[in-house]
Each structure stands twice: as C-alpha cells, then as structure tokens.
Image (cartoon, rainbow, N blue to C red):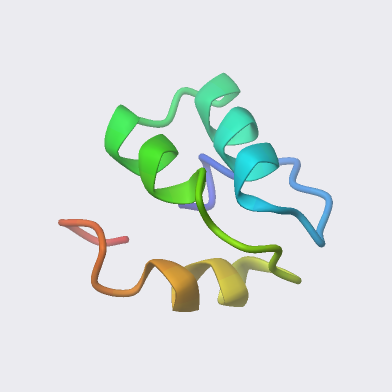
Length: 58
C-alpha cells in the first residue's frame, strides 16, 4: 500500500488515489478498490476504508 500511494498529497479522494496508485504500478484490484473511496486524510484513513476489501496484506 505504501508503495502504491508513494507521493500522495492528502487529503485525497478515491479517484486521485487510484490514479496515483496506477502510476506507481499497483495491481488492478487495488486501483479498483481505491477509486470509489471518499476523501481521506492520510494512510490510516485509506486502510480503514479498505479493511476487508482486499486479499493479502492490504
């Protein structure tokens, strides 16, 4: 997750995070999970929103 959102300038909404993650080489599952998210204030907010949505160590 940290690699995917490297360079994030919070607060960010899901569309902006998805675009950033995609440009950082994130897989499609993560990009698709980020896109509909509401605006979050930082990495902890991202993790809270994604909890239980992704397989692996998200």
